[in-house]
Amino acid sequence: MAGWAAGGAAPRGDDFSFVSPVVKYVLFFFNMLFWMISVVMVAVGLYARLLKHAEAAMACLAVDPTILLVVVGVLTFLITFCGCVGSLRENICLLQAFSVCLTVAFLLQLVAGVLGFVFSDKVRGKVSEIINGAIVHYRDDLDLQNLIDFGQKEFSCCGGVSYKDWSQNMYFNCTATNPSRERCSVPFSCCLRDANKAVINTMCGQGMQAMSYLEASAFIYTNGCIDKLVNWIHSNLFLLGGIVLGLAVPQLVGILLAQILINQIRDQIKLQLYNQQHRADPWY
Image (tube, rainbow, N blue to C red; front, top):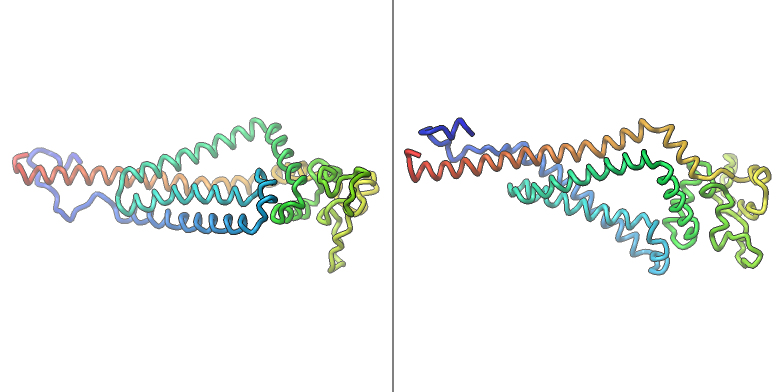
């Protein structure tokens, strides 16, 4: 700014602009991409939510993945909307709101990661609580049921701590007064898989909770999913680090581009004011 603001210097032409089209439109299309992704997230979340029965949906609200999808989608929509409009209209207020929101989101993720590492025991307890809640509502929500089955098959596990955790579910409960046909059983996703069998026996977990660990281990996975999940995390730290980095880099790039564009817009405003003053007073 000093070059053109020096006393007596001629103003730059009206066609000159400090605002770089490259920075402006890279930031715009960057936000447009994530804005469209957020719209898809909200649409999928709401569609999945509306397909469920109201009572079942409310029963497992705390562990419903569609709620998380909608919330993240709405927040992403609002933040990227500020970025899109702010960059296209060169609006400093919207760009600052976008930059501040991204900075807060980045810091919250950073703090959550540090706290999760420092208080790993409490995190483990919270994960155990969530898994036990999911077990209780296993039959109430089809999406939740599919998610649990997928997790148990992928990690070759059953229940939270052990296969006997399934007694917390009213259908699999082992009490003598339970009239369910699945009494004392476990879901089919707990069963040992036989590659030679093309058809899955969905009743393979019948009566498994009544057996000892040694007896049940011949038919199902007896280890809980919490230990399996912890072991998987320890074995895939580089992969998780890459995912975290992949989430952090776009946020940092967005913050950097927004700050560059804000400074360019401010310089442009100063230039316009200077040119106006110079026209009014050539000796200014």
